[in-house]
Image (cartoon, rainbow, N blue to C red; front, top):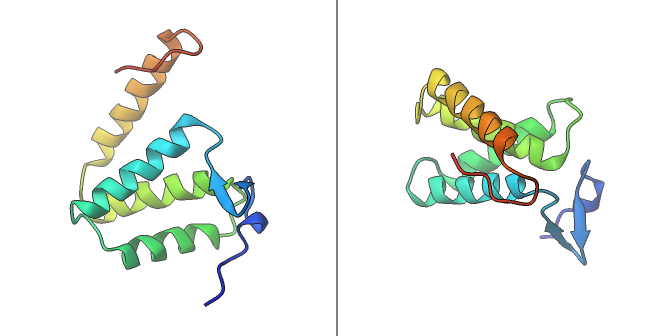
Length: 108
């Protein structure tokens, strides 16, 4: 099986043939996905289907924006949290980011 050409994905930055993260949130979204999969929240096939659906949705986004949207939708479909709790956490992150000096780690 031939590996996919990742260079064709919007916003994908490669080092050699490997993708790299442009921003810390991309690595965090990746890590959350792997952690939830390892805990049995969803199968890797379910994840691949969700991500593929986002990539082929017609929405123009960077790769990891597709990744994050797919993760949010899968978390919702699996009832792993509530939409209200997810929205509240998003707001908490925005507030924490606003009060964190540039270059320092964001803490909730």
